[in-house]
Image 1 (cartoon, rainbow, N blue to C red):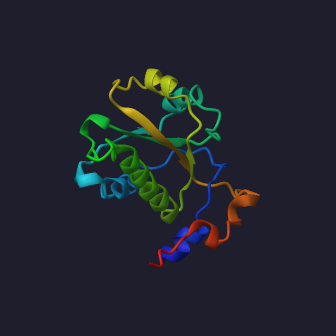
Image 2: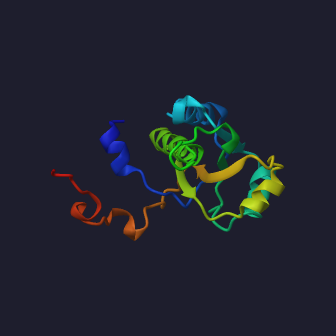
Image 3: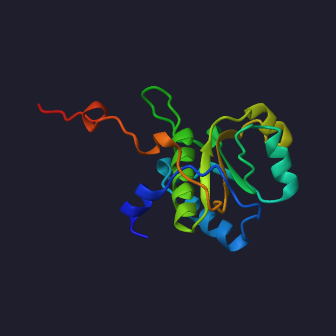
Length: 172
């Protein structure tokens, strides 16, 4: 699909058919995250694939925003491996995780898979249910699957602030 068309058509899917994604589709989505740019190419992302009934049941204990998706990917980062900005100590790893998540989200849509980027989850519950080491930080959750026939974007999907509100040109 043309990239411009892809970014225009993608929306947060919240209605899924019940079947888990096939491994080939998961691999394709993971590859998109794997090649995403990261600070100094440190690749601090850690991705947990949830594609069984048991793992999805555990996920449902961690968020109400699972939308009954049959598959999910939890994108985490390791701050201990992060590039650090020397001026203020800011870490690139949370940004890296967001870039990886974006690549995966767009790849999913390109493969005909609907997904929704979820930030509303209990990170402590995630850590406990999935036995994450204390140095791994959960950053984003992509709940995903094949959209139902009646899946559609929410009403605010196509509403944007005027470009003049969000963009500024430096003129001197």
